[in-house]
Image (cartoon, rainbow, N blue to C red; front, side, top):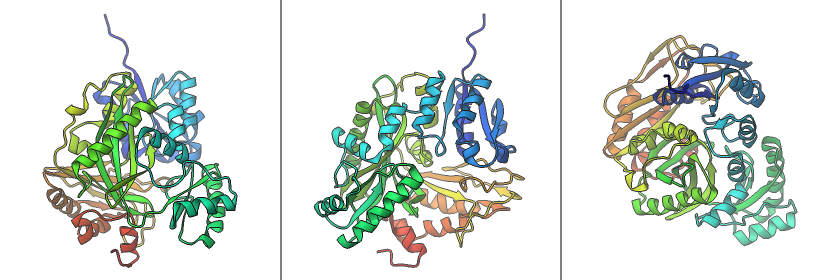
Length: 454
C-alpha cells in the first residue's frame, strides 16, 4: 500500500523569501509550486521548486499582485496550500478570502483577523481591549471636520502625528507641532490615504520625539496555543524602512519584554490568531506603545530564529496544516544575540537603485554567520521589484561578539555587477551610537543627512 499523496504548497512570492519557504516545505516533505513573472523566469530560487508557472509580465500588479492569476496557478497545479511570504499579497484580506472560497489554505491568519489588524484604528481598539499598551490618542478615526481634529489634537497634546488608518511604510503621515499647521496636515493625509490605500480614514496620536522601534514575534496554532518568541530592535531605519535589526533589544530589561510578550500572546488568543505575526511598538522612557501588527512573516525573522533555535517558517506551514505547535512558552529559550543587515541593490553613496547582472559573488562564512539570499553568478537583478538582495545575519554569545562577526562578514562579502549597500552597512556597524545600542528611529536619517544625532 502507498500512503496519501504529499500536499502541495504554492509559493506566491519571489527572491530570498521564496527560497526560504521552498527550503522549509522540502523539510516537511511537501510538493512545491513557485509562481513567477516574466522578469523572474531565470530566478535562481525556481530550481528548488518541483514545478514553476509563469503568471504574468514584470509589473507586480500584473503578476505577484494578480489574485486571479495566482488562484488559477494553484488550481491548475493541484496546490492546496499557499504561502504569500512578505509584501505583495501577504496581508491582503481579499486574497485570503479568494483562497478560502476556492477551498485552499493560506499560510497565515483569516481574512477577518487580517482586516481587523490592517486597520490601524481597529487594531488599536483591539489592543486596548487586550491590555496591550498603546500610543496616547483616541481609538477612533477622524471625520475630516477641522474642529474635531483640533479638539482631538489639543486633548492629546502637541506634538501629534496624523496617520492614515490603512497606511504603512511611512506614507500618509504628518507630524504637527503647532495648532495652526493641523488643518493642512489633515487635508494632505486624507488625500495620501485615499491615493495610496484607497481609504481616506485618518487618526491622531501623540508624537514621540526620540522613540525606538521594538517588536515582539509571536506564533499561534489553531489549538489555543500562542507563544511570544522574543523581541527585536529595528530602530535603524531609513525613511521608515528598516536597515539593521537585532534580537534581543539592547538595554531593555528581560522582565519588561516578558511582560509585554505575555500580553501579545494573550492578544493572539483573544483575536483567534493563527500563524506568525509581529506586534510593533515604539519604546521611549521605559514605556511601550503599540503602533501596528504585521500579520505575516517578517523580513527580519532570522534574528529571532538565531536566538531561539526555532524554524519560524516551518512552524508557520505546520500550523497551516493544522498541526499543534507542540511546545509551550516554558520550552522557548533565548541564547545569545543576533544582528541582521539588509543588503540592497542600491548605490552605497546615493542610495539610488542600481540593479545589474551578477558577475562575481563571494559569500562570507564561519561560526555564527548566515546569509539568506537568492543571488547567483550570472543572475540579472530586475528593476521591477524591491531592491533587497540579501540578508546577512550574525549570532554570538554576546552583542559584542555578534557585532564583531558582522564587521568581519561585511568585509568578506563581495557582490560585483550591481550596486550594493555593503559599504554603508560597514560604516553603520562602526557608528559609535549604534555600537553602544539603543538609537532612536530618527538616528539613521539624521546621520545620513549630516545632522546632529543626539
